[in-house]
Length: 165
Image (cartoon, rainbow, N blue to C red; front, side):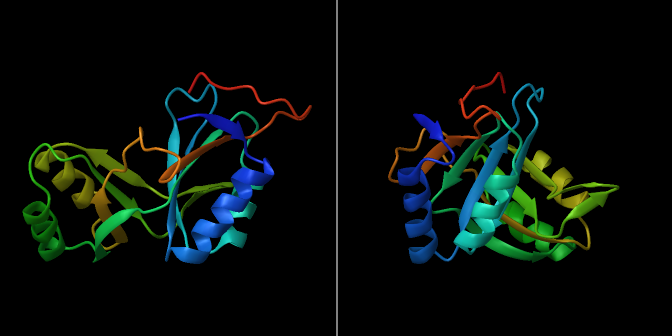
């Protein structure tokens, strides 16, 4: 996947079009020099997505997925966990995202879990008991530009400097 500046007009126009035609898009941000730190968020409006991109730190790589696949949504309880375990076959890469913000002082994020085993999925869900989540298949990181786009937040001087992520 080729990266462009997150303020590139073609990049932004594509995201705007996706937000008009899809009920939601999935955003993944990987933080430069963040020791693998990442965050996932769902957006149902271009305005909210654009604001989030504009507030992302310099050097962050923002990947937007056009067609996120989250067939299971709800508040986590034992019945919800059993439904998820029956839905996802062993070895399938899942992604679970809490849909309420976790706040710690000035920081806030959406807790997530991912993995490829039912044991990992069960552990992730048990850590989110009582919290609303979406659960689905992790998007393909190698998806083409029709399905996913990378944008890198430029540094203060306007230059795009990638990773390490």
